[in-house]
Length: 113
Length: 113
Image 1 (cartoon, one colour):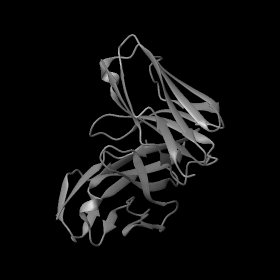
Image 2 (cartoon, each protein chain N blue to C red):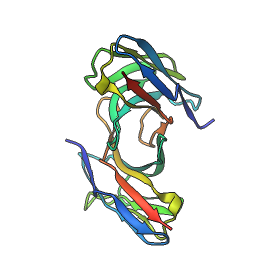
Image 3 (spheres, each protein chain N blue to C red):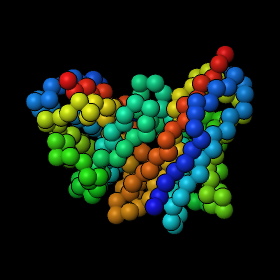
Image 4 (cartoon, chains in turn red, yellow):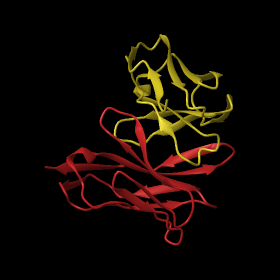
C-alpha cells in the first residue's frame, strides 16, 4: 500500500543551524509529494510540493527534491529561525478512486535562540 | 480569497447533543475534505467530496454525518459522540485532482464531555 515514513522527532536546533528532515515513501505509480507545516494551535499549511521525479519544491528557504530512485523527499533549510519551530508533515497524494493524501507521522522541530 | 474558514473554532458538547461543524471556501475548489487530528498525531482522513458528491468515506462511524450543500460549503453533523471523538477537526479543499496540495482551515477543537 501507500505509506510515508519520516524521521522521528523532536529535532532541536540552534538558530542559523542547517535542517534536514528525512522522508521516504512507498507508492505505486507517480504520486505527488508534499511538505506541510503546522504551527501550534493552527491547521496545516502547504509548505512546498513536487509533482514528478526530479522536481524541486521550494518556499521560504525550505527545499525538497523528489527522488524516485531512492523514493525520498527530504526537507532542508540552510539556516533555521526560531519562527520555524513547528511540526512538519511529509505527505503523498494518489488517485485511488478519489484523491487521498497520506501523511507521515510528523516531526516536531524546536529552534532555540 | 485563498482561505478555508471553519466555524466554530472551539466546541464543547455533551454525548447526547447534536451539533454541526461548518467549512467554507471561495477558491473555486471542487474537492473538499474532513480530517480528524488527535494530539501529536497526523491528520486522519474521514470524508472526501468531489464535485459535491461523496467520493470517499473512510469507514467513519455513523455518528458523523457529512453534507456538501454546494461547491463552497461543507458541513459535518455530529450526534451522540463519545469522549474519544474529542479532537481537532480540519477541513481542507483542493483543485479537483488534489495533485497540487490542499488548503486547510484552522480547525475546530471539539471536546465531548
